[in-house]
Amino acid sequence: MKHIDESKLESDVGYRVGYLMEFVGFGGDDIQTIHGAAGALAPLVPGLVDAVYDKLFGYDATKRHFVPRQSGYEGAVPVDIESLTQDHEMIRFRKSHLAHYLTSLVTKPYDAKMVEYLDMVGKIHTPKAGSKELNVPLVQMNALMGFVSDALVSTILGLGLSRDQETKTLRAFNKLLWLQNDLITRHYQDAKSRS
Image (cartoon, rainbow, N blue to C red; front, side):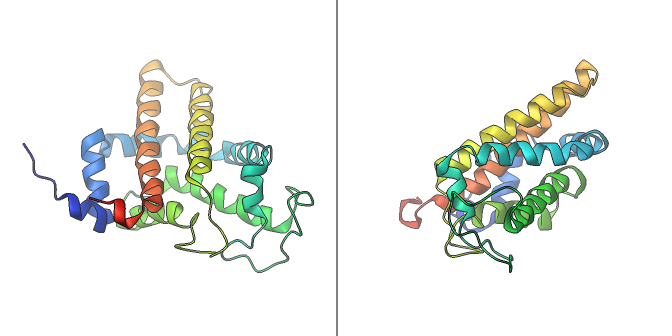
């Protein structure tokens, strides 16, 4: 039986991700499969980004989080949720960040820098990083991850891959999204509840 330092899982994100990768079986073959899908998936990123924002704008509980100033954005902020449209400068700014994220998943090496980036994806949606005004509830982050997961599955199923390659690609992205989900969820835990 392998010993896992559980306190280190909470204090060392690299150790945490290493453990999770080993546990779910996310390894070099999965990364190679994800990178191998880049040519087919990268051109579809703009459509996926639009689909995500269509979904986010369909609910007040998700759309309201785009009214406060976003971290790194310097332009005019929307007055209120009703006046906010997808062609607002801040939404275009946010869409470019989501496109960069999705492209990074299929092109960047899965090294320590990528682990930090994936961890920041969770943290930036809380007051712990970025905008202090932004505090997206975990239920909304889970809803978003579920939608993105389904959209990726649907996209992969539409690529016309061989059955073997399709299965490998679906499994690789499934494992990756579970890793990402953990790196989101960890920023919602109260420090007192960690044991």
